[in-house]
Amino acid sequence: IKEQNLSFVYEHIELPLEPILRAMEKRGVLIDRALLAQLSKTYRAQLDALAKRIFSVAGGEFNINSPKQLGEVLFDKLGLEAKKKTAGGARSTRESELEKMKDIHPVVADILSYRELQKLLSTYIDTIPTLLDEKNRLHTSFIQTGTTTGRLASQNPNLQNIPIKTDLGRAIRHAFVTQKGWSLVSFDYSQIELRIAALLSGDKGLAEI
Image (cartoon, rainbow, N blue to C red; front, side):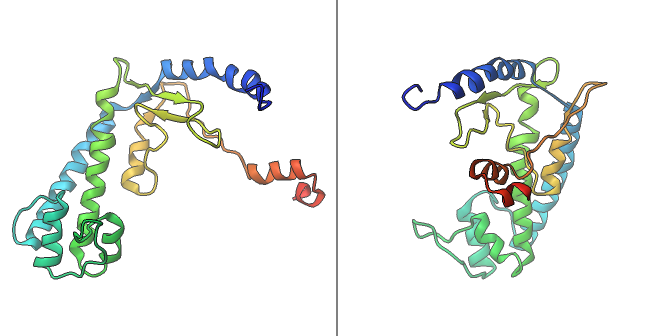
């Protein structure tokens, strides 16, 4: 630290943050357990409906989670053309490959939806309730030196990857709540990289912008 002239960063930025992060970990975030239970019920019903539709097109039941069995249904039974093969020579059923095929046959879109629902259920909706304390709070571990950019990371569980891309995923975020009289607030830097560039360069035009 001293050799790289980082004493200021260590003593005035990193160390003072330590007790704040430990307090955040200890307090945890409040979770609406009932909302997750309702989401689980709703999503499982949708999952069952999708499975029935997929089995109907396939002409029988199979393990949708098995790449081999799914490949046999898509490429052998339905005659769809495989876009790519895996390193082992198998026809790829990865999400990125299925995305290229979803306009070819409606069952592909159903398979993608099935995978999304199953991942949301197994990773978040059905797992988070098992991690809550007696006050319905979820505790994570914050890592100060987990990224090269200096951003915080978190683990066990990772609270910084709660889905946001689809409506199904975003619904999970509504389970993160506050106690009565408190608010959740979002803060974000505006054009922070350009502001730093203006400051360091001393460029008048960039500073004015």
